Length: 576
Image (tube, rainbow, N blue to C red):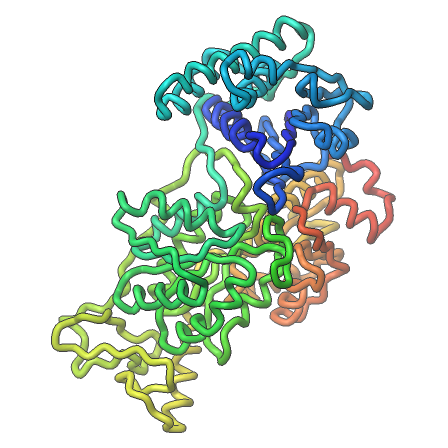
């Protein structure tokens, strides 16, 4: 595989996202495989943010600790990233803001001057974009088309000014540095879809029949709610920004009780506030999907960083005992199918369903050939009021544990949802026998739930020397580490778990049987998944490879972990 890695860095408010977004759109239209990860501070202005864009000949799934090209909007970007550059490397910068240092080739561009020529400092973003395009060999006419489409909607001369600025930056680099340039990997024949994890989860919820969503904004989960809300009116979805997370989950439960397919999204402390509502969903058997986008805690923690610290919380949140699904998709593509599947499963089994993402998953962009819309099967699980036995029993005891569900408002039918222990018809009771039967009824659902798909994904060597086990967004880095090990002649395999509850213990035990040197890779301090795996299968894994500094895994980080465990030895020949 060949690839070019570009890192763009600067202060919040300097237009970093605008430049990155336009560059990614150009690359996806050109058919390139791309993975782009964002790293940003919890502030509106200042600080240091950066976007790393991998442009590859094959699909790529995770960030890297190195780059070939650095686009520096300020001196701090050079200071913080110069040691990550693979020499020979290029640094693009404004001639007034950055001092050359180190062994890279510095390309100074009069960005501010060209922006003033175009009429305003804001056009500096397009000057920089034009310069980048020239260095990596993108066509100017394609860039002009993209800028015209993007800024033409604003009216006035915005499109013209941005085209002028980009053309100035493009031509300056071509004329002043004619022998400097980078050849990108050969693109595919067709344009690709550009999507991030927030959009994928939102699209999946919609494909799964979403009719109502409520949320209170909380980083990094807000993108899911924003995406659905931006399309809600045209799709007939009701979207409600609640006053807090307690209201959010209870509004969604009310909508679900009325027959709508409902979801909510949150992060960190927001999920804590939903605990009582989730417990209500458990006893009242009200379907709901909760997209929890993880970030480092406790408390406020690091609102814009990534972590996998909420697994235990998702598995156990809500007092009392009740079954639930917990999913943790590994890629943006998988997040789409998982979210759609979650909507159907919540409706089918009348349980809470968690979709666990994290900042890396939702904020990273990836290019895909397409999403298979036909793979999502929508089925309505509401009972037919004309076929339900009367008098209607909302909590009818059934062999499967799933009762016929009718929404509020069915004529001549009393539909009761209750948070207390209840009879089959929903009336409150304290009968000991009914208590036992209702608990057993709810847990009979597990027999069906455990048979549902999205079990572990297996990858790599069939008879590995080293086996990695992971869940959620660590999939990308773990897969690339496995590829590097296999390429070096060290047999390696990977088991990635999407569905973590009900836990697929049989499949896990079968895969792990006889394997040695098994290491769980996850983004928390305690090894939460490693403990879950041991509890469910009795299999004791080796020393885990953990990360809990708010930053994402890379293949190199995982390989460094293996070197720490086993020593350099055979790992010397592993190349990344």
